[in-house]
Length: 331
Image (cartoon, rainbow, N blue to C red; front, side, top):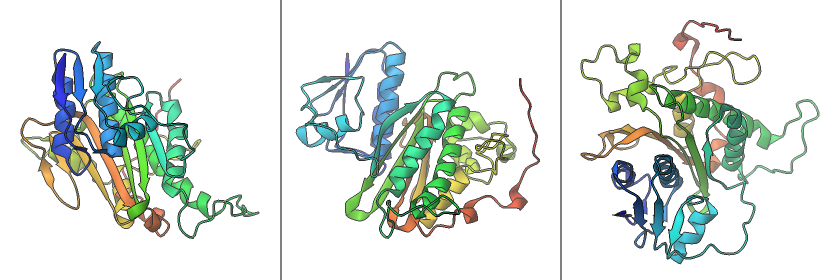
């Protein structure tokens, strides 16, 4: 069994350490033990990457152990279902019962069927809206629309998240990765009113998906970073030809729309794919030498109290960005 030492922080702020640990585990040619004695904090981005890594190893027939989780973090990570199917060795036990926190978090969840996406998107939207200032979850529904303020905010968020998850699962399963899955997790941090939502897949990655796309055709040397930047262009990351609600036509909601919402809610959309890394508020380029994630890892961060002021329709791709619509009829 190969032992890998977890750094103190497995977070979006330390992507090289986080992705490096997961990459080392995935490249191991033996069973893996994660030595977590020094681990102090894991955010949803870290949880989802850990979950995807452990599952992928188990699918390959590897045993995975986590050892030495301290009491300050063990209960929380078990509460978030991060190590639900992993052997824990010398770890502090989870504490007591589980309170209903659906207005503040979504536990680590694996999505492996398209039929699950709508439900998960709605759960994530409800956790993002939560108990937002100036919004009363008990507000009566409007007689005409059947909605209240919370629903008016959650519905467009669920729309965007449904599209994001659909694209994540369908892109991940290209190039022979037919069993790829998507992992999601989210958490509201009350102290600074910050939300983080992670969407991770263990599929083929953006470069493999977009290698022959027109957005990359002018580049002689195609890289993971260029593929990420291309995916952020309007309508490039959106690949479905049917709308998400009944017979509605897909409006091209993809990473561009999600990034716009994050930015307008005082946040950011960070993407890792292969060796590429893009943070619109900081570093953009490559991860550290030898560090890579085979699929796509996305983190949305924003302020909850700023979400209510976002005009979601302004983040949809413009008509000028539209591509010809090709309808596909299948039996």
